[in-house]
Length: 153
Image (tube, rainbow, N blue to C red; front, side, top):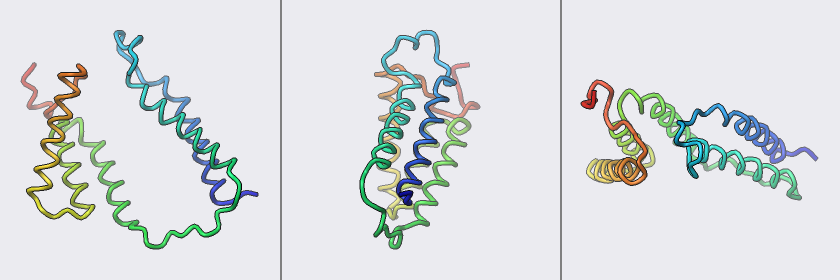
């Protein structure tokens, strides 16, 4: 029987297979060809998880009776989705440190945090620590500032 759960699982399966088929389009640098973790690793894991979870949903017995969508904060979820799109569009022009700090601060604000000291006191150090970990420990280059502020040229 084709229920809402199974229709959703079929859509997830189709999307995951399409996503998986496009992973080879991610270009790797020559030295990354034999690396254990590359730009393709996380997308591959997500694609496999999507396929596995959708197959589990397709094969599980029962119906989707009793699914209730009331009480969810759909406006908040929509704002978070818009914030993610804005982050994706600004991360290169504004630089990683600025755009990611603002993304986290506004995300916390949307989720209900109103103390600016907490918003900035958590997001900025977290982003700087993550940037340092990626660049200094894992040797992954992430442009910290906007291009016009790049002093390495």
